[in-house]
Image (cartoon, rainbow, N blue to C red):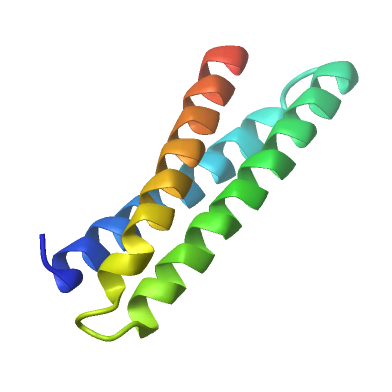
Length: 94
């Protein structure tokens, strides 16, 4: 996969995760106060992980055509971390 294709893939996934976090935020308004606390903790964690993923995306975006692959491993790890956290959140609150 070339740099441009990888960037598009990351960008699309970042947008999807933002939408999913926003949906969790909306859902949190419809639950009890105790559950709202749990939702907010999870949402905070997801936003932090998404920010980490966005930082990796930024590194790749600014890297040269040759150097971007050096950052790909970090982006892949952040992707896996975020994906696992998102799956966990949806299973916890569905």
